[in-house]
Image (cartoon, rainbow, N blue to C red; front, side, top):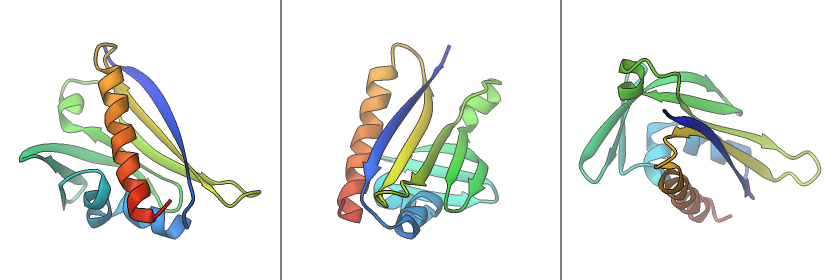
Length: 127
């Protein structure tokens, strides 16, 4: 059974820059996957030659994007992964919230993958 977990990262960037990196195939391919292709509401993420399709569940510009892996959808799982952000009005810093699901056995490696991906994101935006 997969369990929900959340991660939070502080980014020093312009929200418009972050929005492009989170919501476009080219932006996602810059930091999250090797390549991203889109057909209707299906985004196909590619890593090391392996493809993983996901359905776009929600896109709210300047706020969040949510996907569900097709494999989880087919298994009837109520899971998703979401990239959401808010701008701190005091500091103008951007707080990125990642919500994902993993089995207890995979939680540590799944979290580590997100930390690596966000590290790549920070390098791209210069934060």
